[in-house]
Length: 317
Picture 1 (cartoon, rainbow, N blue to C red):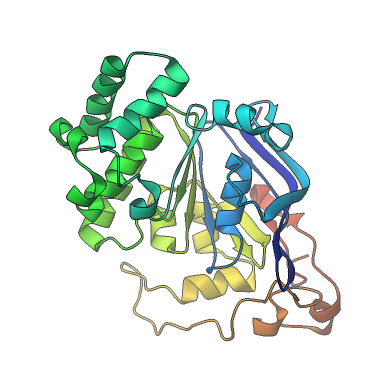
Picture 2: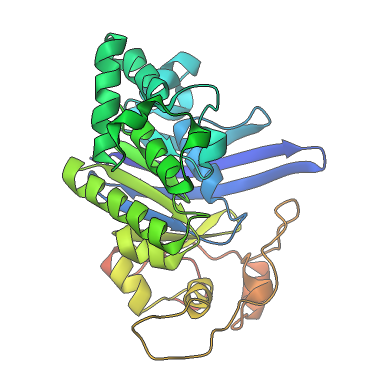
């Protein structure tokens, strides 16, 4: 049985200008010990998908339809207390901005200890001992558990946030742009840390990013999102060697290859769709170089091709 299974997830934000369906019919499975990359431009629904899974949507957002089955538990039916019992213990999230995610008024060690005491009902002394072990695990001097977030560098804050997420040894870790705003050296260290932790602790992971080099470094499979929908899903090697959806091809063509032949980079023309009033048919058709008449009126279904790959495009039969 899959650790996580999404079926036709539909999440809507109710804004003053009208409802915005930011996640529209998303389905995928995540196996135990697997890392899935969610990639796409800003505004395509990646973070909303993650917040829907973990139950941290804002008050003006709601799951309208679909299922989120985590380890046999239907997350969409849980009340606040039910979600609190799972969040932090069974599944955790590394947020995009460490400055906003960490409490500036609490020492980092106390933030880790708080989660451990909440879920494992142990003493603060034991919880702080666990915090020191986690700091050592993520490559920070254990004495820094008495530091506040502003006393740490950006890379250290990011690793501290990973330590907070790992406090109770979760089965699933959701990482939302974990290396954003870090320089390339620190970014490489954070990504190596996450890969090593995944391998050593057999953690399942969902990695949200727009950086395809990060996906290639860590992920087993990739789901490409556009306009609130998944347009292609395949294992990492298949996706990079033979992308089928024009949007996936555009993302790869816009990214430089270090080892491959030198070639001019090409950007995807236009901008992502306004989900207040999304285009009819395929949502990518206003930007697609291969657009056909059918693309403008009929939405392509996500169909399975060879090798457990799925793609939503009229060009693919």
